[in-house]
Image 1 (cartoon, rainbow, N blue to C red):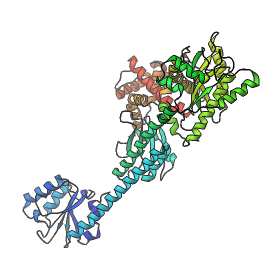
Image 2 (image 1 turned 90 degrees about the vertical axis):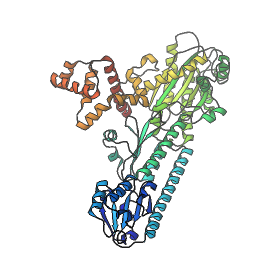
Image 3 (image 1 turned 60 degrees about the vertical axis):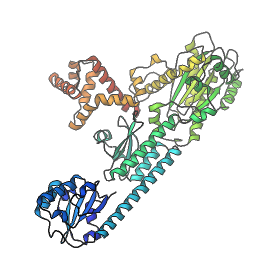
Image 4 (image 1 turned 90 degrees about the horizontal axis):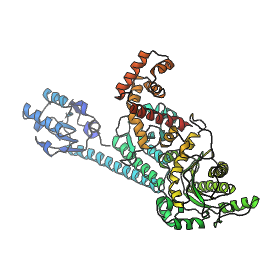
Length: 603
């Protein structure tokens, strides 16, 4: 950090000259980049700013107009201050000089003793160079530290903690809805740091203590330094490097196994990505992996919750019983204990094929929470294998065949069921068995199964996996035990079984959705915070009751004129017409997103 004018005046070599600030004391905090000795009246033309000028006073001995012009030119050039040695060209600085310096906010200092300027310049320049070297060393250390974190794929918590350690201050990572994703507290407790966090965060200025996180066009969070005692340039440097590392971390986690996929490409990934477009090729490869030929194929995604850690792709061929029409290579024949033993043996022969995971923002937010195995790729792989092994056993118990892929939170299956007969009863039997087995896996608390449209084409079924995954995510939110929107558990869910709240619970963590909710409501939320009122509650009640003002006034125990006044204020604050149906829908959706972000996240 560059020394200020006041710090230069406090140096022993300058104090020896008996310095006296005659004017412009308000500018003593200006930084000094260099010291320049000159007796030229037009020296400002060759200066670039933040210099401290030393002179014997010749430019101040040419009359009032020249003196005023000289001081104004130095101030306009961004010079940090002027130090004048008395006794040579001038014996004393006049009140006019002091008044002009005060008017310009430009420090003018008189040295009442003879001072060797060369000693001043050497001392100040040594300090400046040492400071610049320290800053370069700090920048190098920051670069190497965060590069190392990127190379070894450090967890989100570790990246935030590293930034806090470098700055010796508290650092918080939040998403676009001002929900804390990771934090490290310094010189305070985490509880104190997080108290009234949303209110505090919304009122923070955009300065060197806040840095956005994510690619320029896809911001997904913000990194915040909770201290104003760190030099701005140093704070900005650390926060920006931490934000870059966080952005890279998320990009890597989205596609962390891209290189491995070239060596061990999974069939499901190939079909979903469109790398396999020939039905016969797909069927031939699937049959060698144990999927029955000439069957009804059903896309199934099993979403689990309760376990912790990052994702690791695993693919696995799952064999069933002799129920398959013509017994593919991985099929199991026989019954009773022999079938179960064979199923266990088949599912234990897992073919690990690292593939791309597709959690998106919701998965990333959960990953940020960390937990057991969160920084251990082997543990994540083992968990994924265990989940897939459990699902394979369930498939075998349901007397079906399947091709599957898994990470530590989701299992993707293409089920092969015999043709003919009603589909739903058989599908319910298989899904019930799968869910029961998966629940036995360590750390699994809740399971939801989403199903897409069945088909006799393997490629068409693979294309439906995205829809099944969507349904499973929504169903898991709806099945939250503490959620007020929970539904009666079902063996599996189709798209028609989920509602609007469930859909919003799935996408509530998407940056675009959060940005929509913030845009719609931020003016009202700011007003509530600043004025300590709760007009947001009034708006929510008005929308929940479909605009029935009479009933809303009764439930809120206020008069209708008072309610009308509140609604009018809401319209003014938001700049909307609450009688407009589309505006009501937009605001109601934004409130639902905000409510779900709290309630479902808590659950």
